[in-house]
Image (cartoon, rainbow, N blue to C red):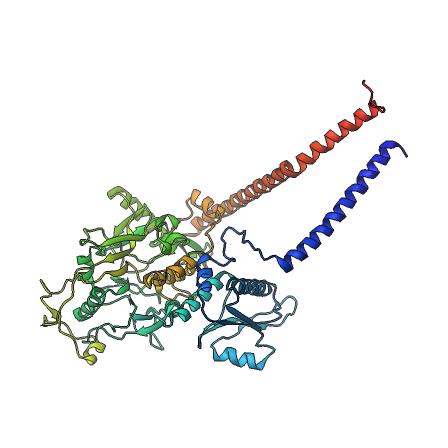
Length: 619
């Protein structure tokens, strides 16, 4: 064997021994660190899986043992559930460690213990039915993913948790246990009967969000002498319709005492049961309050180019006389889609909210504010917005959208309008002078519930508060964003219901002064919208605004253009993926391959020199 071959063999053996030694060292160090060193770091961009400083602070304030029972299925069959369960266990272990002995953590499986199952049911924790994999013949499984917290004799349960929402849900219940009471949230809105009329709005999901924040109290009427109960911590007024002045007086006086309220208002009511039903144009009965506060609503509604795209089916007559359907996409400009640019960045409520969709929205006009009152616009429409007369029907007609856009551009300059506004300060009262020289006379309970008795100007000599205590009010020019939709998660044609739930929950926490909870809720996943190549290509071919009703020839031309748009979108996606892959490969070569190549080349140069000078002499 030549000296060169022996040298290379020695180098290979040295390399192999070095790798083996490195593996042994890593194994031993890792095992020792696992047993004796406790250091974890969440390196994800969203930072959702490590305990936040707010939660760690509250855990450090525990002066008694917090018993946490995790009702988790021991062996989930589906991979996604297995991953979720593993992450939940890891997060709960982190909380236990952060508490420094103040948490006692127990894991139980209701599927294997009848006692644990009985306890879970008692706490309101129920299993979720997970469908089996049909292709593999897998059966469905009841999966338990709930926890309970017990502190100083009081107990709270979270029926269903997931890794990304665990911290907020855990902290919410912990804060309430430590505080010793549950805030009361008054709901004053449309009656939620067992069988609502077709087309009438329901708010089941919005009410569930409120129930997570506190005890929800239904206020059937505010027109009697009782007004808003004194123990209401937050008043939520949804879609008031021609309120009696006494109800407006009750809301006003509640705020004069330092109350907090969310006012979701609509002057134009649209039905969801069908497009042909005419809209109802009403008054809320709170116009006098908004006017004196300096936040009146526009009479018309917003027309916004940045809006939701709605897909509808339109009949098309073929050459053979048959009638088929063509899918048509309409940019429905009466449903503004607010992106991150339209949300206040310096307020925790909206700082990390991905977006918000509103429906037939009224703008909040800008007017001189009362002395000492502060205003923050939490959400605004895009810069391509106009205020127009509210339509009488819901019509998805792309040609109408195009013509309206041309007409508006020619007649007025677009601008951004406030949609959600927060007021803080000592608000003046409109009662005690002018049209309302005193407190409106209250109704008897029966008359108030029936709601058909008109105010005839009668007033009482009750004392009227005005500008006494600092109030906090959020005024919204839309109530439809809270409605249940066909998907059962707020009124949404897409997945914007997630934003609605997050926004409502953050508003409630903010107004209840749960600053730590607002900070936790803002730790939601950062919105990273993907480029919709097909949408770009369709807009380039003016397909987004195609006619609502077309003949056979037009439909054929449209179909050809759609095919071209899809082909171009596919090519753009391929190019983007190739660019990303090529960039990754180039980076790998620069950081790994290039240094290795240079080392190999330098070693070869030394070997050549060694062969040329076997005895180390000069050449």
